[in-house]
Structures are given as C-alpha cells and as structure tokens.
Image (cartoon, rainbow, N blue to C red; front, side, top):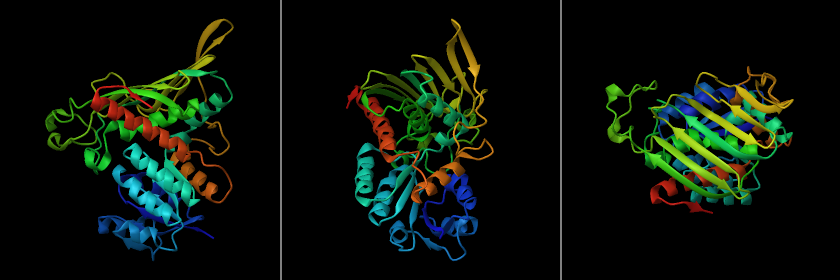
Length: 368
C-alpha cells in the first residue's frame, strides 16, 4: 500500500527538493492532492509529481480534510507554516513542514501543542543533516572524538545571494531575511552536532545597510536584481547564544555582505579533545570536513574522507540529501526507524532565531 501525499505550496522549494525526492520514491508514495493559492501552479504540479487524477485545491482546508490524504507536506512561506500544519495535525495527518518550523516562537508552540495532541509524526525539512559530511561529523561527535564541545560557530555567509523569486524579501510573509532563511540551517546543524538544546540567553544584532539602498545596477547578485524599495528584511544578522551549560554559539547569517569569504550551512566546533570545521555549501572548500587534533604532542589538521557518509543510510554523495530526507521520513511513518529531525529540536532553533530578532529590535539580551 502506497502512502497518499498531499502538498500545500507548489513553489520553489517544492520543485527544487520535494518533487524530485517524491518522484524518486514512486514505489512508496502517490501524490493525490496539490494546493496552491495560484491554481495554475498546482495544476502544473499534477503533471510534474502528481497522480493523473490528483485533486487540485486553492484552499488548504480542503486538502487537509481530504480523508484519502495520509501525509501533508507544508511548503509555503514561513508565516503560513503554523496554521496549515496545525490544521493538518488536527485532521489526523502526518506532517512534514519546510524549515524553519515557524516565523516566531508563539506559532512554533502552537504547532508543538497540536503535534503532541495528534499522535501523528511531525518533522521539519532540515535536509543538510543528511549530507555526507554532516553525517560523518555527527558520528564523530557521538563517538566523543571532539570531547566536550564548548564553543561553536554557525555560518551562513553569502557575499551576494538574495533570493529574488517568491516572497523572500517580504517580512510579512517570511518573518525575516537571511537569519530565518539560511541561518536556520547552520544553527540546526550546530545544535545537532553539540546535542545541546538548552539555550540560556541570546544577544543579537541585525543590519539592513545594503538591501534597501543598493541600486539595481550596483548589486552584483547572481540570482538577479532585487527591488530596494520593497526590501523589508535584514541583509545580515549576528548573534551570541549562551547555553545553560556555559557553552557558547555564535551565529552569522547574511545575504549581502562585503566579506572575503562565503559559506552556508557550515559549522565550526571546538571541543576539549579536538576541533572540527564543516565548510558547508559554497566557497572554495565546498563540502569539506577538517579535524584539528593533538597527535604525538603535535597539532595536526587533516581532511576527513566523507564519501562513505558515516552512517548506513547514506551510501554516498550520489544520493541527494532530499532523497535521504524522504526515505527517513517514510521509514519513520512505517515504524522502520526514528526521525532524524525531531520537532522538539526544530522548536529550539525557532526559539533562538526569534530571540535574535527580539534582541536586535529591543537592543538588549534576551534571557530564557
């Protein structure tokens, strides 16, 4: 029996990640319902990922209340994650929601409450955990190779990388800019590596120095020019996060920064036994993992071979993280394994991101 899938939101992330992954899992799933506020987009998606007789909706309530739908994918702008996920969970559906969990911690809490009452599975689309380099570093952390990790950096740096499609620069739809868009991936990875989900205090700053001011002919954005007049979010965010055990995480997240380096979904970890650098996506050292250790009374830095992935579920880089995310999700629904991205973990990510924005707005430290 194949799983019956309903998809709410047929935009960029649906086409980039979820449609290909679901098409690669046709032996396990059937996409029987698609919803988008633009009906033509949902209708087009039927031919791309859906069954020939898939239902098309413009109101997500109709999709989540379709009794044939077992699993709902929420692939909308951030501010809509909460209401759709809650409705789907209350309708008795398993829910995969794209990152971040929500635009603010209040909405995230509503989602957690609905999840706990539902008895269904709920996960968030942090696919960078399934990269071969990420899986390898996670295994090293679990084995204690780094010792106690007490200082970490979560990097999401783009010199020029403003997404100019969709609603990314619309604060009312997204809740923020690069921090909530790409910083969320780096923070998720860092917390996961550290296995530390107890923040104590957050201090954050945001800047909108370039997004609203650079004219189109001076932007140099590979994704195309944005409109400075409608650029409503930050172009850079930075934060210090103190954890309850005394460890420290720093965050940098930028779409526009006159920086000499560029890296996304990257992390730097310092432990009592060793240090590690996950170079992430972009830059000169794409998808590299380095360890810094003391060996024979000498400091040695070495590159780790991550081609094997570090775990059985990841046979190599030929398999895309989105495909692994889909496999792990379906396996969990079938009782064949555990979720890798647990909602309790994703909630803490949103809690910290929300506190960064609050700290920047109010000019003070936020203490939990």
